[in-house]
Image (cartoon, rainbow, N blue to C red):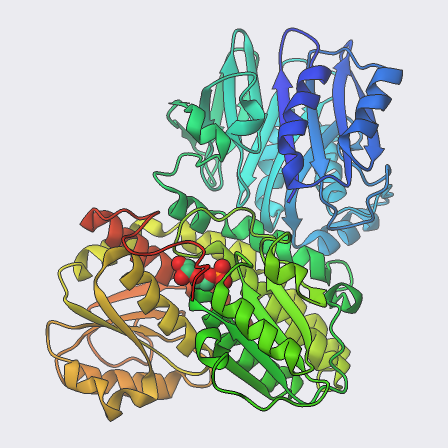
Length: 607
Ligand code: G6P
């Protein structure tokens, strides 16, 4: 996750860019840079390390131009050196970038094939080079960006500045946030409204796929297809600026929409994007000789642990015990000598998880923890911390912390598979490549939030709802039921689809929606046959699947939520999103307090 800011103004941009970057430093701080037009010509100041190094560089040799872009970096491709610091320049173009360009290797070899030389190790440079090449071939900046954007795969936000053009700044968003703001004869761009707060309180939050061309006094927004679109101006509130809710009506949905960005930010810590391998040293855990892994957590974090059991057992042949912390702490489980216990917690303060950790420590286990709050008690009490980078999660019902936990666990499972000799290098590359595609697929799903709202409208009158899944999608069914219960107060149960016939089928009649999490994986046919059992009893089947329109389903569905086709490895990360959105929309339609549902707490520090 990086922070970006841009100004097309009428007084020196540099001090104001630096002020914006300070407010974005929470997004990354391993290098920073600014570029401005000095008498119409591009010039840059960049520095590795924290922002004060950039401030010193600017003070020593000031930039004075009124148009500029700035960036605070959290390195993903390439070390945090000055060379790799943004803005990245090529020809007449400078660009700042947040996110990942998935197909950068293909684009880079295409450009190298045409004799282009690369100065940096970043994925960003392909964007600068592609746009610069269009301009060399006679395109205007607007035409050049419009031609290049459809070629970029991934989830990202970009802001461009052009040598010799004092009238244009261009921004684009796809999966990562970008807002524009207006002042007196000036326009601004920033990763969030917090960055723009000293400049303006009038903002437009760009929507997925939008790109915008700014002049001093105006803007033109285009959507994914290149068609001009209008987006509304909004007044940012003081509260929104403490933790920016963007244009979302509450934190939970904002956090659902944050997922493409924070999942990418999380895996970028643990995988090398260029070689498509896991960083064994960043993951810290010694898996090679481990005989068993004990996983403990509560609530949503427990379901992340359950999903991980499938990954560890399949890809690393590592036996895993996974338990709810409040049960584990009292059941006097015998633990292997020198074993490893893994705790998963967003807050790092959950009392039951902490007590289970203590039990494991007292019984000679090494302690690893996956936490979102790195200063938390669980983190401090662990031998190894493997953080998620979800950012602050405000909504009580966990969403982005869950998918970031899954992301870390997926990386750990690949690392374990390699260390234990059960995955080849080629398999590792294939799994990591599928993980890199997750932010893009997640953005595709969040873009269809309105369709999922349509499905939610059809289930909110139900008294009971069943969620079914098999294999690694079973924990996702459990999470779907938990989310719905937590925030809409509709009674929901998650079941292993094969277990339906042993009890819950008695609940099914024509008033019971049955939501089936069914990717087209090796268990699809089995899940479909469980679905037929529901259909035969009149249940209202809602299928969440990547199967083509009713392909192989052979029964009338009540509704269908479509998920992009992907490698089965990443399915839990994708199928988590529609169940979150379904719960969210159901809760909004029922008028509950989505962010602070009754009787619950974000962090449960009592037994
Ligand atoms: C509470 C929250 C849940 C969360 C659980 C575990 O019940 O409402 O959303 O999953 O605690 O919290 P932790 O901070 O340990 O992940």
